[in-house]
Image (cartoon, rainbow, N blue to C red; front, side):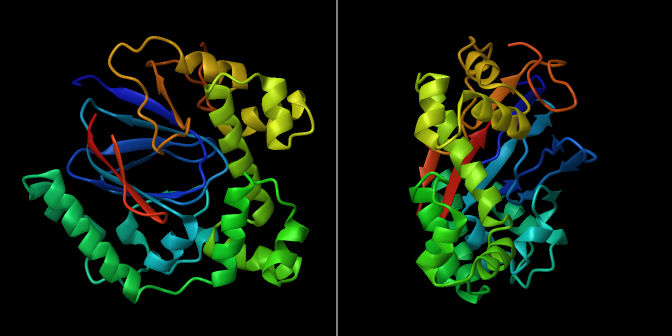
Length: 286
């Protein structure tokens, strides 16, 4: 595609590492100045962002469970929540710069060779990384399993911590407190159900919202648009290609026409390869 492209990216239960090969992407989030970067790390977030490129973008996007990002980079994840940064600006102790890895991946002749190099490097980084707490991993897994529905007090009891201990360790290794993380996972499930054709009232009940108004309010606060606007926009015909959601089986993204968003990033009108539970990679040129 040789025309500029804008995408609305909603909050998901993952951190993102984009290894860009050449062309930059401009990322805008309400309340923050736009960032234009070739390689990008985005920590956990509770608000949507708009990504835009000039017509061609190539690279590999790696979706990380938040605690895996903590292990790889060793940075307290609360410092990166709702932020977009150059990964080489992080105070990590990796044995090579992320930008150098992106260049090495770009010159390889096939995606198979790129993924092989990426797997080798990530395995080495993982072995040398900061260990995450097994209790944090267990607590995160419980939140994911329940779609964000498990109460924080019960979650703390499940892993043998006080609520304050859980909150502190979650912020350090996940980036969000357990309540905020549950909001993200609950909304992620709601988007999936709505995209599958479920009604708003049914979705609200299934995902643990008080009522349809509660769902609509959370949806607006975290994506910049209402449930109806989101689902309607995803069903519109696409001039070039469908959104290409960032996570398999999830409704994460919208393609935006130029000039159709306000400050919140909301619409004014209407191939992924999974390697493990902790890392996933998406490649291609868009």
